[in-house]
Length: 172
Length: 185
Image (cartoon, rainbow over all chains, first blue to last red; front, side):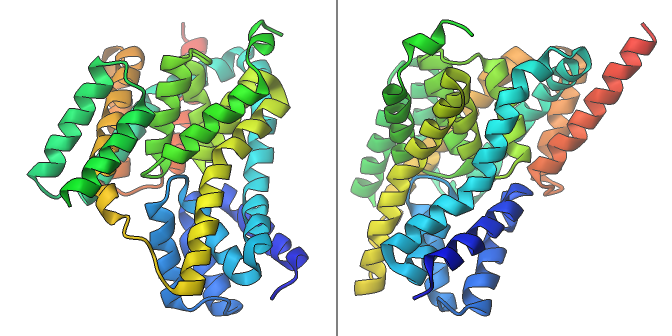
């Protein structure tokens, strides 16, 4: 078992790098947990990755899994709290200054100008996710039904997603 | 400060984001689409523009699904609201992953959840598409904005560029365009 303080420090540093871009998280955790400290085998790491993809929430929940391995439930708790600490802090600082910054004309017009790019990014996420998980007619039909329900009804999206999970369990 | 501060309790913020965390399958943008539907559409807690600004900041600052929750929570109730939203969002996944980790490291077993994902994944894609269309309807007016949206889409899908860099480039472009308009109009 590793001391919780050491764990906190390690995950805090990962969290700082994480702020620079979420995409480095997987190779980084792999490097630190598997190669450097040898807390997990590569096999366990990959299983943990699968587990974080299967469960709701961000992929960064991988921190909970690796932290759990290193220090049990308290380890998982410390890992989760500290990996997210830097980004939540920074995001709070940004949010706090957002209204004020928006009053500056140049910043406001820049922010407005970025909005179309966000539309492109959201569409790109749908495309990328579709390319990796729409493998047959059945999936396309489910997607079309989902689209129609979200577009033209007021059913809560959470109920639709849970329903879709049940459908997935039933037909597979 | 505005009136929303009195009307929405921290408990409601916590419960809403906990439910989002519990149903947020599919990661990243799937979660953002879910937050958008609930906080912008259903509850009207934040305007579409403000939400998209939050997404832009969140995208640049790393784990954007969590970041949009923090941003929305802060918008409602300040620092405390942001912290409550972030904790509410993470807590269900944390408890679930802890439980599954315990199962895995003690019994070497992972539950067979893949089948459920075959149902949720396509539906979540449908959700993201709906959100993209709604956002596009509001934000894309004229050729310039359509081109910028297409460029961002292409840079991410075909050039495989990191979304944060794409956004920074778009911000720089937009900044230069604003300065240009100011000087020559």
